[in-house]
Length: 140
Image (cartoon, rainbow, N blue to C red; front, side, top):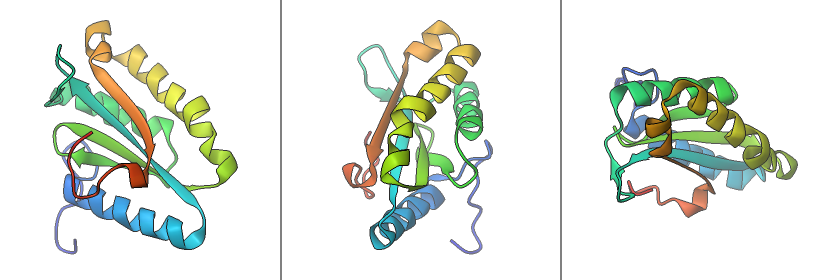
């Protein structure tokens, strides 16, 4: 990754950098006994298929994620232009319970406030363990 630009125009890590950080955090969490999770946000069409995220929507999603999560968490493109991800790092068993009860709802609240009903309804948000996503895959 040295010598390459790792941030996209939106201020989020590009896919290559984000995948590297995800893999690194996954390995680190296994060694340390801490946990990390990944939150994924994508835009879908009327059939539920993942589609390219509108540039303005992507900026709002990334900005909302930046405000909703900690500075130690990584926000970037899990799949360039299609899926925004957040690697939620250094979690204890107790703090993992906060993701669905506090962090996820905080992000949803921000997105509802900033997006129109139609755009918000097209978003899919998923929180999962890093072992549930394939690091080599770009699927949701």
